Image 1 (cartoon, rainbow, N blue to C red):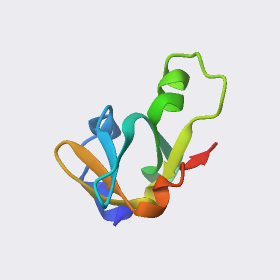
Image 2 (image 1 turned 60 degrees about the vertical axis):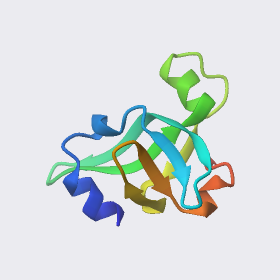
Image 3 (image 1 turned 90 degrees about the vertical axis):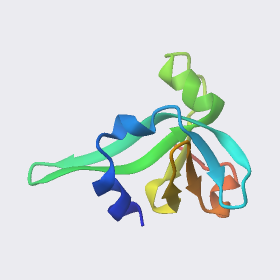
Image 4 (image 1 turned 90 degrees about the horizontal axis):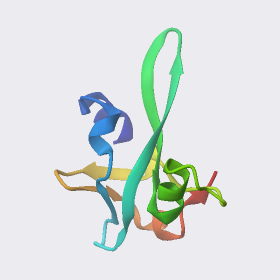
Length: 96
């Protein structure tokens, strides 16, 4: 899923400020950053999304804690207004 979606995105910035919700509809927050990986022989690939209050604090340069991150592999779908992640991502994401 994640690999196919990353090819459909015009830019990673398309995800900026979109709502993050679990597949059962619980809102986790909004996307404040997109982590990508790139190599000299391949285009950049989205690897994770940063969301929530910690993500906002990092974006503003006020970070005291590591941001909450959801690996791109947990993204189930991308809608017009929300990115849906699997329910396991609701366990607080990972702090990186």
